[in-house]
Length: 153
Image (cartoon, rainbow, N blue to C red; front, top):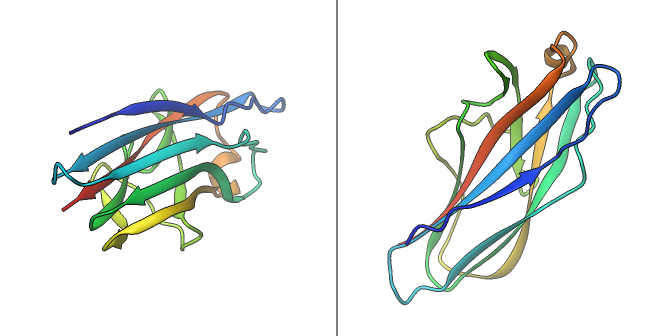
């Protein structure tokens, strides 16, 4: 069963350069066992304010609520290989899952959590950007789609 859900995240315009960052979160539930109870919900957090030339460190962009009565994996990927894109211009970013070290994403899913089963847990996805990458960014909208996948097995 595949259940994609799109939720826009982080739409704050920086008045200095008019940089607007937009993350679209997509959730996919892949429960291989019909009897498995798995759920994953994402709630957007406050807007991401980016000042060109200033580092952003683990800014919380979403809270994830996870519940599963079967073994599971949580995977993260994005559609732009770790770049926030404005046309052909990109700004590199990294994410942290549940306050773990930052990782760069790609189109290939990365397992960020595995478990035998879990009661309802809340996790946080944080985004980091280097000031050196935003200092020369052109004005406009930057987007990326983060894919959060839970698989039961």
